[in-house]
Length: 134
Image 1 (cartoon, rainbow, N blue to C red):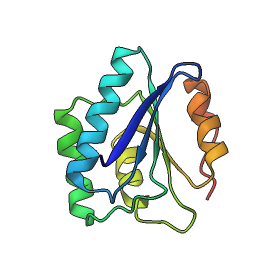
Image 2: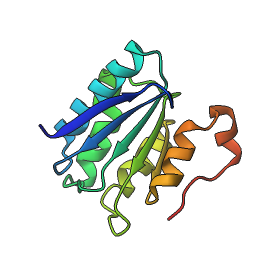
Image 3: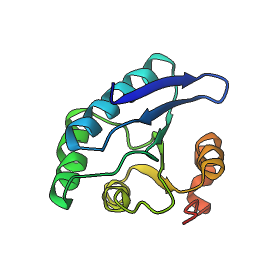
């Protein structure tokens, strides 16, 4: 399997560990499964661990994922999404920017503790804190 999904009920978020390079179709599948788990467990946050997954899509495919696929999946802009990447990996930077520009509550992290702290944080406080750490 390309990814593992689990529900952290105590911390109130869904966690996805991606085990292969990220493509538009994999991003769509991960998003759909994470959204289903969030709705089933009445959660509004997801931590996506991409430390072993490079984004291999070009900018247009990232853009279409955000503006077409996310729309078809009816992803909620109020859900909090933490993207945890390897320190040297900048392949996910563009998709984070496009997601944020489209109004999604998403942040890219290179530090696991910071990502987990942000995902557990009260959503109302995120507007005043710049959680970007790298």
